[in-house]
View 1 (cartoon, one colour):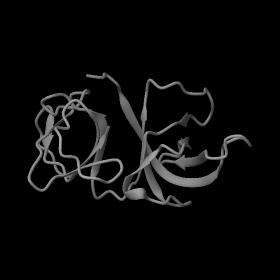
View 2 (spheres, one colour):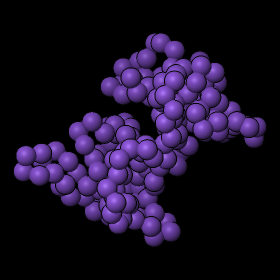
View 3 (cartoon, one colour):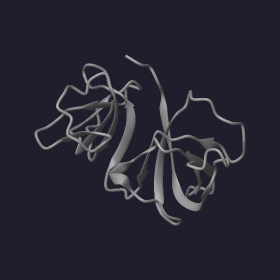
View 4 (tube, helix red, strand yellow):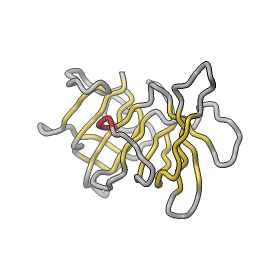
Length: 161
């Protein structure tokens, strides 16, 4: 089981520009401002996963999930390289983490109870038919129990293979 720690930054996109060099023109830079006025930049690469293949525009609320142990350039505002980006429409709670064989997140905060209506797919949109335990998952969920860890039956799970 991989032990990684993921975090997120959410806010509104205030600028989008090219970030690559002449040799690598496939990088974008999103500038994000959260409700408290804090700034961050998301370095978007061709392999960045976008939930529902969202096309991000200036003014959209987004959430980006990144590995806190990944190398990062020391800059202001901080520049994250998100593994996943989603439009933050507040219909769901979202969590990116590794989940153990009992489907408990590595940070110990969330336990999944997969139900018959839970959609489980891979990042390419195809159904995932295996056991998602032990894998990196982006989980979309609504209500949780007040237990520790909180438990939920997710609406959707995206498996990062």
